[in-house]
Length: 414
Length: 78
Image: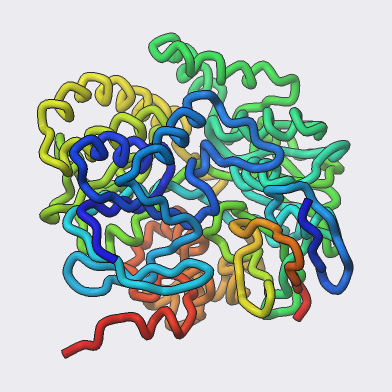
């Protein structure tokens, strides 16, 4: 398969990029590892309510004859210059492209604490995603913890589906949360989303200490403003903010700074013909992703004037991103929750004690097998980066577990 | 309304339901056994952590990114 423009990720950035580039007549493919377009924020499902804007984007995407959506597809490896090896449930194949836009989004930062491997413990955004996919939570007692606005979004979804959210524990101090809320009138429709701050169980300067249970979560021990408490519950949803997905960008050789792909005013990376937009250039929400995606889409098909007209809008949402990232910066307390016997690597069941004390990520991997399991270090590598400041090297293929038949599609090395 | 088999038991779910949700609707929610013998359940919900991997019709798949289909055989305890 060969396309003019290949877009990796069908969230808001990828959808906006495809729609901006489509009028040029370019042949466009958008791939995503989820079964439907929308990304994490516009995830569809039997218990999801898509906002009108999301439905509008999806409808327009489907109506464009020159946009092909490739759902349930993952990039497994580079397959030569301007070509990627892609796998879906049925087949593996090489897709060649002229221009590439990386809209790989973000994932939750999940940090280890005692008991975090118990069934019943999920990410905060993770719980929201699972509920949208049909997970029943009616009547359950849930504690939501971690950091950032996603805690509020997850709370809203859980309550809408009949759960009792007992507490929302934000690790950032009250003054940081209040300072962020005070700035929200600059972005009026974000103000509405902050109403969750008035939840009776919302506590700033608070965090989870331990998940308790025999084979399944039964209670959580938490620190609320420094006071230890135990709360009986069926679920704990804990996420410490979002981190950009950089694996493909790093593998291609894109420059990265402060955990984000570096782009210029046209959303172009340092590599010719490769652009990036959305959370992969820095966490900042769907509005930033939509405008960056549109700029990248226009720029990739040479429509610089159309791209430039969107610059002021992008600047506005970069301001929001900055306020967000400053307010919810991680404090030290949540970096010290794991005990020596707490598993850091959940794929290979490697405890913190086997990892700490190494000189860096590569040495830790060789000494302990951490990061060498199915998730390829996406969870424990990000945790080790937060805990120890270790930078993982560029990932090696296959970037995720793949079938042998898929790998056989790779062109033979000369 | 897809009908599937989860660990040998029949289960009917709403259209569009993920296999990750089906694990809870038809069982205890767990998806796999770790290398040290612990039961695990979906964690990230978005195709990253691989905790939700199950065997579907003989293939290893992520439960959170797979929609339930008629006749599907899902195994969480191979």
